[in-house]
Length: 191
Image 1 (cartoon, rainbow, N blue to C red):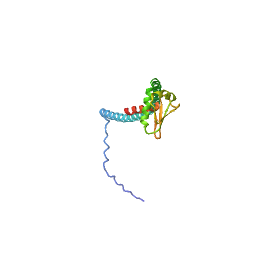
Image 2: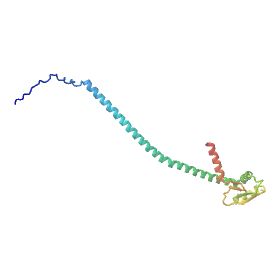
Image 3: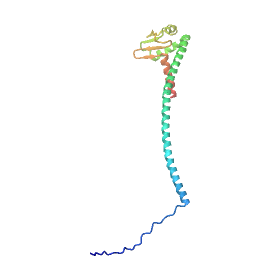
Image 4: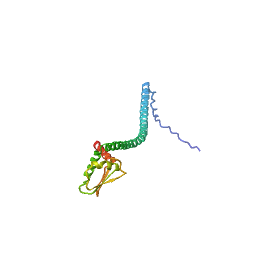
């Protein structure tokens, strides 16, 4: 039993050369690597910080706009209310002054009555002229006889107010209506 095994010699191929070992980086290379890493970190941090800061600014601006809006809405409403109150006060003051003027000089009220009658076309129709009872008593000596015009005392009217009624004509000569017309005319000129 002798089995013999034959031995073969291995092929003699030289082993590959070991990879070239680089030496340690030089000081300049280490400084360049460190500077590149620092620049990259700075750029990344700057971009993240900038984005975060801009988001914070947007949030604060939105809060400020909300606060300003919350303040301006009531102020605008208050402004309108004050304007209305001042207008009403002006009408009251003007009414008091005109009432005194009409009492002191009935010719002023007589001129207003004549103007209202002219506007309404009193020549062609029957008219009803409504006045405060004290104004009728005061005006009677200052107005010529008015054909086709019936004087009606109206306690709902203030001194110096008048209303003209006809078939298709209604003239509101109340102080409030006259002042509102004047105020609207002024507002239209300034618009």
